[in-house]
Image: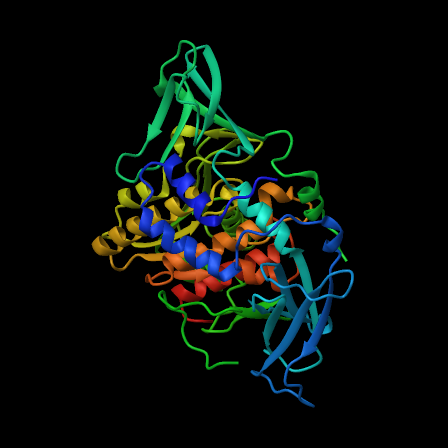
Length: 490
């Protein structure tokens, strides 16, 4: 198996990607590698990856009070009972009280010696159970990290070019062989870029549809693929305001309602409370289908249970990914969802000319005279690509957010972090480890800005739910946290 150090991958990747700010990327890369203890591992023998753990309660007490921490020391051992000598394992942990429908995620700290400290905040009274899930051992994490090299193509994109009745198709990607004629789609200012092989006769500006599919085979060795095979076994409350740095864990479920650990979340679950908060605002939901779920939730909620007059307009055709607009004339608010630009991984067709980079959409917003609210959700469609592609997108979003805030300080801006997805997802491309790393990158890039965070990751870990599109009660709690920033708790 070919080994690459993190530094080697970084330099190689940046040579492939034009206009990636070197120092900014290196700072984020260093932050992520230090957090995960990523380093080159020696050649390994897969029989040692039958892990067992020994768990110890640190500083045990006969009883604990609400608000205190419960600390566990977790030791990773091989099949012989020997302690691992390095860290880097990807572990999820949560506490829960099934009878109370209460749960909260734990903070896992890598001690880089085969041991991990897991800290739980005891948010509610009663008996709690501790659950932990080894998502990937460190050897699998190393393989996943290596597989994000930009030369490794895990997704195939096909562009459809249309002029009248004439239709031609060609391959599209971030990195294509420059020995062939290319149609290059570049944002000169921000350096965002992808290209397609030039179709036989049609011009580059006739591109109309983008589709995607997983490429066959794997970039990993047989042994590495085996590592990715799933085997399942209170602080003082204050108003949620943009600029608050979310804690880890960011909250907990109690009776299936999410309570933030750093600000007061309201009970925005009734039609009256939701529509009262939405009234008079202009909402712009930008990104992937997980924030599109918010639109679906709001639309279903009002249409079925509230007497407001509103219209839902699909700005495209059935079976395509396209923008959706909701206009509520009586409550005087609008909500627009737009998908982000390339890449978009879906079996549906993506209308290319209806997609812009979110940074460009932010620049074009005319928000001086309206109460505008922007929600950005990116990540799920980037998991299969080089991390540099995602970081570049984040850095461009950061610059666009600062420009928007400079000309319209009253505009609300929110970052919805990634949620977990199906354990049956193809791990090499879509592992939650990729999502976790990307969430850390988002916290790093946006953490010092005046933005609100909706921590969908902690919610879905705490609820022990693994679905790219979470169930409605999870979405309802995401929306409730979001509205808690905008309006006083009902």
